[in-house]
Length: 352
Ligand SMILES: Cc1ncc(COP(=O)(O)O)c(C=O)c1O
Image 1 (cartoon, protein in one colour):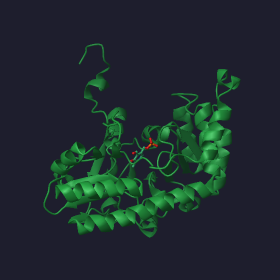
Image 2: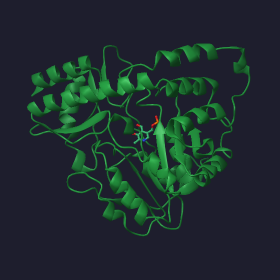
Image 3: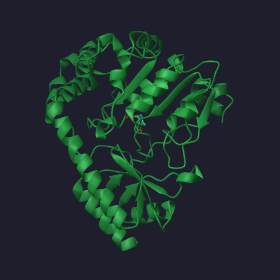
Image 4: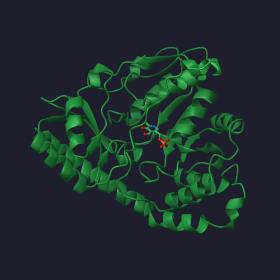
């Protein structure tokens, strides 16, 4: 604490990301990264970008990247906003579209960056309790609000919400922005992107960090009506003119253009997930249904904190949340390769 700080800084409770330990031979299943590297076409594009042109600023509007994203999603370029990871896209969204005189609504168990942005931008919010089975009940969002946001599939539960439910929510909620954070959508959850044509208050966010294997490059984007995108551009152009550097742009374009690699790696992750769920169930875990590249599981006898610590001793890192108490028994396990699953299962067999 310092007298030199701005007032708001004293009140911030920053987000704490999953750790990135610098240990060899680690089975790292704690931050939902993709176990497969990016497409070889991405690596080629990055090499080409290491050139004299780095002395020049990148395109402030990222037009080439936006054009490719728009094409893939059958939208116009003015319906696309890009940023330095979807975290930055979300931050601008909170400031540009979700700060009103009524509370922003999001689930009580969800991506823990949402309340952090509310703190940063001084946004009033109301956390809506998930149902007993950890699903989102859209009827609970049928109340006055300054916006609604949740991930689909939700994090850290991994549970997907059916598209019909999202459409019902949009039909009932036309006066504020509804943000669907689709960071994990490509691992078996239905996307809401096609609803953008009919609902001008819908914003959908995506990331290159998960299904496109580019967490290290920091690129994310939002899709929505030109009106919503203009609000995001106004904030971005008042904050950082060049959030997408030349490497990020070249790599993300190449990733978006390699649909085959993307589909193959997503399928592999989904197949590994289904096998892992079966094996964990045999070992006495209850696993929530997942449409993501991670699962949320609790053992019938051993606690979440204890299991996390025991796995760590065996160089396997998973994510555990101490609070709220409802999820303290759970482990969030990122889907790795089949070999990593094997190591996890054999470690658990020894521990249980
Ligand atoms: C639900 C959700 N949204 C957004 C993000 C941010 O991803 P990134 O900033 O890497 O695009 C994450 C990261 O884990 C997430 O879990």
